[in-house]
Picture (tube, rainbow, N blue to C red):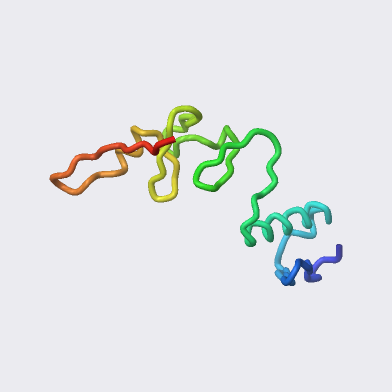
Length: 114
């Protein structure tokens, strides 16, 4: 692939041109570039990304099991329960610490019905 040449990709009803010239993309193989671009396009179109191996799905996002941890203490949340606070994953203890109810109210954990 020649450096500083825009990449083009045709999809049904969509034409994508990647014209960023100040990029290290020419350092990688054509296959890697196309795989990355296809991943970005599929994400933009709302398609589920292809992941290899075991993954955990939480709130419509896929994570590797080693990445499915509390943002504060790195506790693996597999089979422990998890909570989202401002888009981050937390164990129950750290989620409670981050969520403070208004004065006069008590924090109550509600688990979804399976």
